[in-house]
Image (spheres, rainbow, N blue to C red):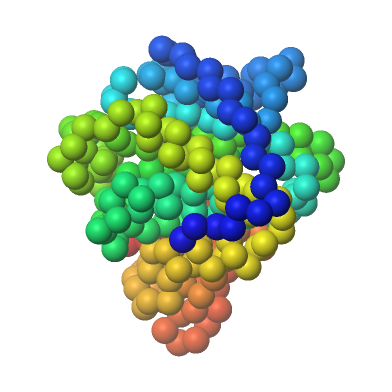
Length: 257
Ligand code: BTN
């Protein structure tokens, strides 16, 4: 879906390109000390030597083949407690970009909380680092790792895929980055304008397993449940087969894919 473009004040992107960094998220956080990076700055590393994933995992990505970058955001219009809205916006922006590239596929899905899957395979992971001062946002570092031209992955990784694996084509990384940034600006602006309904509509319409009875691992037991939503703190809401309502954080629930 294309969002309305009225009332848009997109920020320009200064793209800082590095051959190698430990982690683009870490680079932004460290430079924040010097307050040197304006909103909209993008830090792109062709190779990360210590890429950071969710839940203390690492993010591995073959040098020069994929997109690993972070966007500097300063969502001072957003209550800190509503930070999952930002995650939704990023997911929707990546989803739209992948849908533009592979319009024939109907199995591109947003996997709660921060992944994009195609079928049963993960193509993109996101990590947002927030720096807050009291109740106010100082900085949100939106880190995105999108697998583009890599075709062989470490066997220890769970179900990875890439644009090249899915389409057989090689992609120009900068071109994909531009498409992604374009969509991030559109959806970030929709958030800025507080059109939360529009964001929710797009997020849940494309969310993996939304409204479908599936098996999950919940607190070490396997359960059958249906995703009914995400609460305002970003926790996954499930209804079990026996009509119990559960609200889960990322440590409590795993998808069984
Ligand atoms: C995950 O799925 O575990 C999240 C992966 C996030 C990876 C990106 S790559 C760019 C940015 N820099 C990092 O160190 N991590 C994020």
